[in-house]
Length: 481
Image (cartoon, rainbow, N blue to C red; front, side, top):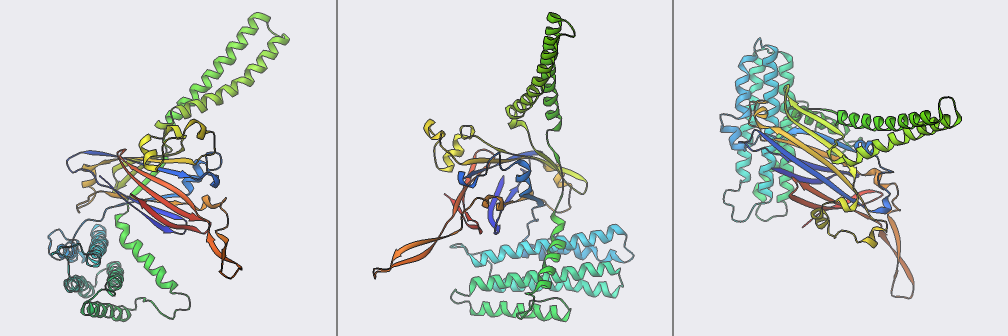
């Protein structure tokens, strides 16, 4: 199964989050994803102006494990809870080996990532309750669970301090403590914002506010950074610290991805074949004229020069033919995906501009228009960019990567569209209107461009998105029905 979520990441960047979840019973699972971009002709984005190297410069992919799924209740009570594993790892830290220290750090990071994910899910459930859902979590229950989790984690500090454990362990704990406090504060603020316009939430708002104030006092007592309303530098130090803590805690989920050029051997074989064909031609011409006119004659000399001129052209034409005739079998990049030295997945990716008549009919229908007629083909039409990924995941090897239950991994693809703005007009367009008093008045109009994206998952499943942008960046993103 493939899960997808597309959102605007920044002014010019789109983030596509793909979740690859293999079947538990199947040893190997294969996933195919096609990104079909339909680009307006006036943006001048096509094979001659936007090469593969340009595209891959604008695309960044991060691969990370899907966070192990626990509810807040399971974090407190489950025997496989990361909090319990963290507590069990502490007694072994006296005179600990390097492996035992690494084990404590690993469980700390996993605990922080799991708490963040579980807390986010609860906040979403309370903010957007489904009708007739009698099991929806309550704010009071959430606060009690958070207090339990925080108190159990902070009890570890007393043990670590009392046993004079390695300062590195103490540092791991304090980084985790600061991150945990920030996560609680942020999600409580989000929940307050969601509840502030709803009726009968005054008591819940007071409880959340009290929890936030407790955390802020705790952070200040520990010398941790907090948001300063009157900061002269717009809280740069705090934002930088947030980034460091996030990277530290969540880095436990990121895997190693080693990329290299794809289909190199096949490509070189085709190029060698093209060179061989051109050499056969040149040699045949030379032998033929030598036999007819003999050595050291002008006709033989001219034939030799012409044959070698044509030989190079035939070689280039042969390379072009083989590269494009077998293009669907080529991949630009290959990636080995591993964790703890276990290669559990591999992926291949390629980018090409595709002619209209080669696009599958189902994709064109999802795009919202039929294939072009013969007359329309003579006109300037939109460019069609295909970015495809093929992944293979080994479930058995994935299970060996961690002592936590792993459901799969996320491939977070960020596509930057800044290059697409080169030929865009100014976004502000003055428009005339009547002011009702026989005078001309103007209002500002906005010039925008639409890029259509059809996301094809395992060939059968397709989703269409409409990207609205101008020279100032991405304005809106719509998911079409």
